[in-house]
Image (cartoon, rainbow, N blue to C red):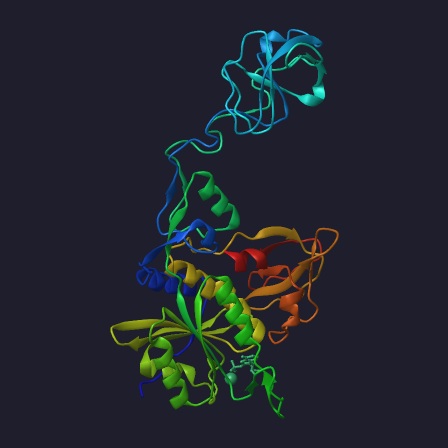
Length: 416
Ligand code: AMP
Ligand code: MG
């Protein structure tokens, strides 16, 4: 067997740039048409442009009276009501010197240039629809939502590569898009390594622990819109690991594993990947999550990307968010960078920083600052559930209470 590449200590940004370059080259090019109803979480393959103005016409944002502002020179002016326009009904052009009773969302009749909300009017009984006393002097344009103020005819409202959030689906629907062209879902094979692992529901024999990464990683993959082929637990030996890799490579875009990527005698993933394809093994200057393996496994007709995450539960969680999630986005043609961090006040001291960039589990307190989970060990999964985000702390940087630190929100890391 060829010698394994010697792990180098690299910055996360370097490693990311390398992985993203490879992932972009292997971008999924197949797309499919899905109903807008069913497109939540998918990534647009083709931009959505609008064939209409939104709103399609001027309409009122208040229940009240549509009129010409010039017809109300003083508060208390009385105008006859010439028509009634509920939402969905198109009124007649407004006769000069009259007002139209109008309801939120109804198109403003031609000739009217203002709406007065009903709270500032009094209905006056009389012939037909009666009259209205307007108790305020309206400004031209008030309470009118202008045609096209949201979207102009011809405008591109959603770019290719956009992950479809609920509000993006709403915007697509607002321009009348019933069907969207989206990237096919990434297919990902997942397995955990470790002879100590036992599944929940099984008795915990001495020396064993429950397999938590399988649940965390599968959940993260599903939240990222992937189709997961879950291969379960692979024993700690070279033959089984190679067999699992071959099975995982068939029909998938990415193979994701946890554990077995350190340099111990029981860590078989790296030699196995190297035997089945190619491998770049890194020591990333980040904490948690130092070892990371990246490569590809050969299959008939091509190769499947491989990412091997460390086994410690917080390490695999954080490495997924900071490395796997961007790769999955790149495979689908999305913008790939990490989300922007928010600047927050540290309500904690971190007197002994690490040489590596640290991602500390932190949570907002009631005073608007952030606090750290007391145990930042990479095995303490409780911290990841407790946290709102990860403080992105540069190498060798001590933090004093009151300092401003950068927080990456878990919600934005998971949800993109
Ligand atoms: P490894 O990366 O295989 O050396 O594992 C590092 C640590 O993470 C060890 O303490 C393992 O027992 C633990 N570990 C590995 N895989 C899992 C898993 N799937 N679930 C929970 N803990 C794990
Ligand atoms: Mg192991």
